[in-house]
Amino acid sequence: MPLRQCPQFLFVVMGAVIIISAIFSYFAGMRYIADPQIVALGVLSLSTILFIIGYTIAQGFERLAEASRLKSEFISIVSHQLRTPITNLRWSVDMLLSGRLDHVTVSEKQMEYFHILGDNIARMNELVQDLLMVSRLEQGGLPLKPQDISLQEFVKEIAGKFQPSAQSAQVRLQFNIDSAKPHITADPSQLKIAVENLIENAIRYSGSGGNVEVYIAQKNGKVTAKVKDSGIGIPQKDQKFLFQKFFRTDNAKTHQPQGTGLGLYITKTIIKTLGGAVGFESKENKGSTFWFTLPIKP
Image (tube, rainbow, N blue to C red; front, side, top):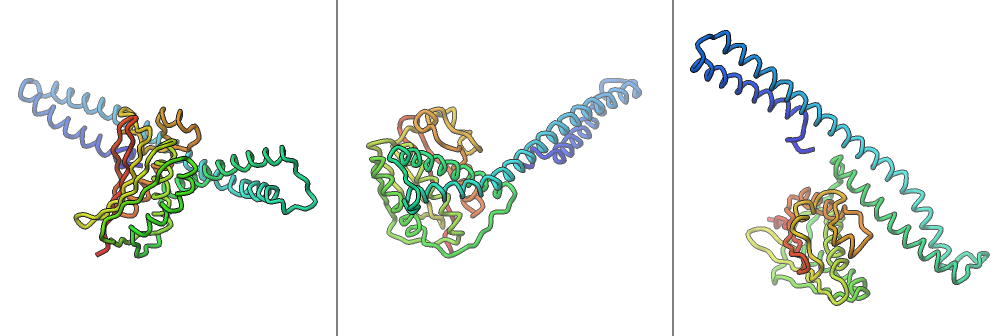
């Protein structure tokens, strides 16, 4: 929770406001009111009112903080409990689709249903994995194993794995690099999640005939990775909410109904944990460019 929303911090701030207001009102009262008893009564009344207001605000934020904690705890528990049955379901469907069960005869129509079931299990698994990642991020339990990484080669390899899905979606995926090969220190497993989220979103929202370009460049001791698409773009009114949990723009929901609204939140949190920054530029119906920067290894 941000410091400005912490109940204890708000209580301290309100205490400082009460003290300053009391001192100011005392000197102002002594200047314009002759009777010191009236001044003292006014200062006491003002302080009491401010204290009640401050206490009410702090209590409200404390209830919000507790509700947020319970929600995060609930998500964590449910996600962990769902992981095992989903894994078992996926294994069972994979066995049926593979035809390795000789004693089981599956008709063509049943096979079609199993494919639909497999697709939905994959979507459920993606949601559970995202929820588990969010839970770990919020609890500060993201395990980091820093390694020396050539960001150019790292991103190029990930982008290459998306070529089949890009071709399937009739999206042209290009990779443009700087002549230099900057190295960074980062956890490859976590960085991979962030890069995959950006490239996957770019392909998903570009549509048939679209273009996705991945850039790597370095400047001022930092390396920048950009993912530019020619997709639906982001409405101006939605841009300030884009990195919030579970947020999806209206045009994104129309273009691609499936989605958790967690990918960009996870990406930003991971990059910040690795010591970098994330941002974007976008215009509705004109495409988007998402970028992140990380410090170059000395």
